[in-house]
Amino acid sequence: MSILFRHIPAVDKILIDPNIIEASHGLPHLEVTAIIRQCLDELRREIAAQNVAFSEDEILSRLVVELRANKRRKFQPVVNATGVLLHTNLGRAPLPELATKRLQSLGQGYFNLELDLNTGERGSRYTSVSRLFNLLLTGEQGPLEKNTNTTLDTVVVNNNAGAVLVALKALTAGQEVIVSRGQLVEIGGGFRVPEVMAASGCHLKEVGTTNRTRLSDYAGAITEQTKAILLVHPSNYSIVGFTESVPREKLAQLAKERGLLLIEDIGSGAFRPFEEPLVSSALRHSHLVTYSGDKLFGGPQAGIISGHKDLIDIIKRDPLLRALRIDKLSLIALEAVLELHLEKAYHKLPLWAFANLDCNDIKLRAEKWQSQLGPGLQGEVVQTESTMGGGSLPGETISSWALALQSSQLSSAELAEWLRQSDPPVMGRIVQDSVLLDPRTVLPSQDQLIISLLQGGVTTCS
Image: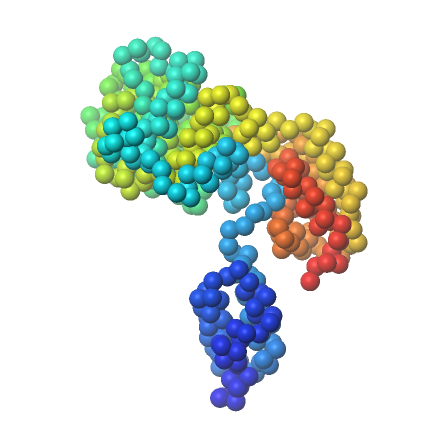
């Protein structure tokens, strides 16, 4: 058996091989060494199991492939030509230039994260963004104008699931929370609303059916142990056909009559000029509203809780808030995005700009891509539909155009892989036997990257 291991070179020898040096360029030395050792261990197990030998060239070739694959696992720019504006796998909402510039200027040094510069004493990381959120919300048709005794406040955590979790724990732990069966959704990554509720310590009480829930279902389920009614926006799907649900206005009236809280998770976090579900509309009736920062709001990942100040104060005192608090870089970006909303500078938000691109301009870009196709590539410009994605505006689409790309040498799956393995990677979507490349979600500065890739044709595929 030892003869079969004879051609496995020493790690030191591998590290000075020119092909290994080229493939590992940009990787830390310790990481390269660890990858090589792991690959060699796997190779030894393979040799022992199959009783076969590998030449040194074969071994080095394997290591080069693995090193290159490891590079592709690291964060890097990707051209999003899928037509999905909030692509969860690609980071959802791109940040505006103001946010990235502020991240660079503040992130590379020290800044007053939890320092009150006026007093010199310790401050709160939430102060600035809370104030800006409150200004934004009260500026949108006065969400709490019907109850002048109520003061609005906002607190921010790491994501919307965390926002729901800490709000329920702080306000309803040990008590019942009523939810319609049709709203017990599963969100990204396999997390389900009932599991989040269980983690908070409250007791889930389901009412109604998957497709129909009436006000009488909620009313009949209330007991002395009931603390709140939870409304959950079904962000990843829509139920059509024989359906019935209860408007928040009626649930708010029921909650008021029975002394309950009405908590609403609207997920997407829409503010004008987007349409419903608007955060401000929800706050006219619900005591608390939770929503995301990186969906329709167009900012970084964040979970935002807005609502009655006395309830927000209770949440701020809960120990779980510290475990779920938003980090400093996300706060920097969030503050910048809030300023753009307050200035109504929506055109500076990439998400809003993508959603409102002119269809004729999109078609012209797709036609330009088509005119540059190299060897082994064919395509036509076709009408298509872009989607918001990210669990936002389910069932709604935006008219668009795309290059339907095909190859005489590759299947649609192989063509998609070829695009994904390019530098930079290009992500399209497979429709029937074509790969659709939708310019709506491609930055104009990336057009030339796509053109250069297409000009080379599939013969460049190694």
